[in-house]
Image 1: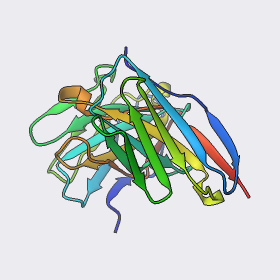
Image 2: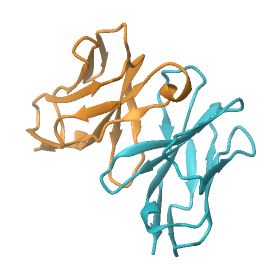
Image 3: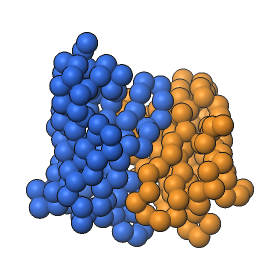
Length: 114
Length: 113
């Protein structure tokens, strides 16, 4: 069955450092991968999308990589700030039918200490 | 202006009751979804719906049914509520083309007692 793993349930880093979150998947060939941020008591908020034919995407302090050979995506937040503290979810989507719907990982809770 | 709004935000009800959660989006999106987030924070797709097809996750009990009066609304009806239905339910919407980000509502916390 399809499986998505976000390797760390929690990640603690110091302000100013780069946070790197990992998303691995098996038994799946997604057409694209997305990253979301979720704050307590709120719904997930879309951050970035990367397609299967793209290696890297950037948006301000965020960078996402997608390696379809390794079946892995890395999500980086550079110059991290306490306001970046949240749970980050990766999500995979494919072609047609139910595979067109996003499947989410369990998330990694990031804490950025001042 | 709230893009995807759900009501109610909190819902406490007894086992066996029937309840509904409403969802509305003002983004002009043509596909809407319901997700369930359990106590372990795992988000699972329940339904996706546009004006052409309803896709149901096969693990969803038939006590759950989506109802869409128009493109901007997708309500969730739950019959004969069970303790295990307690969770946070999120509505979301997206544009037609696959690969667009989803816009989520703020969730409805359902507690069945």
